[in-house]
Amino acid sequence: MDCLLLVDLQNDFMPGGALAVPQGDEVVAVANQLATRFDFVVASQDWHPPQHQSFASQHRGRRPGETIRLRGVTQVLWPDHCVQGTHGAEFHQGLDRGRVSEVVQKGTDPEIDSYSTFFDNARLRSTGLGERLRERNVGTVYLLGLATDYCVKFSALDAASLGFKVKVVPEGCRGIDLNAGDVQRSWDELRTAGVEIVAAGEIG
Ligand code: VGL
Ligand code: ZN
Image (cartoon, rainbow, N blue to C red):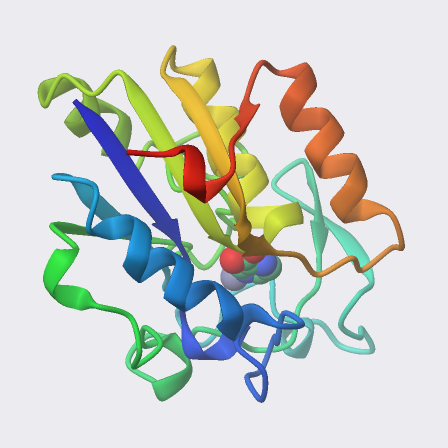
């Protein structure tokens, strides 16, 4: 069984959103098209409580883009985004929800961020997705979404570490590039970890 994991296709990561990823909206069509070729489609949803400690607003004198230590891991501070129940946290209205069989919410613990759809950033807690993929005999996880250099990268690396074969679809990804070169380095890191980069046209 193959699984398609659609990472964080939410309004706040789209142009005009609180944490807009440049051209983020362009990947929605790629997601919809690819989803028609999979029997098992999972969508992740960044789902933060309003007081989430990854928000710069929660730290006096701190601005988005700065880093702090949180639970022993370096944490980038972000603008408030994907707050539970808000429009920004909803999936892009163009996403074909009918093909999504499961939604995995992450980043719900106010004290630790979770870029990955599998584990939080301190790797203390599992979302349960890895176990559910195993139950369904998934061998290969295909990924696309936002953002290349955060949630896509960490989800792909974790999936690989759990023993799944992992393929990332570059046309379906856009990155933040907080520091110039982050996106390029992410692709290099993924390749080094054994993750395959495959064009959408080569799938199915
Ligand atoms: C993400 C930063 C903060 C992402 C989520 O979806 O890549 N990035 N929260
Ligand atoms: Zn977030």
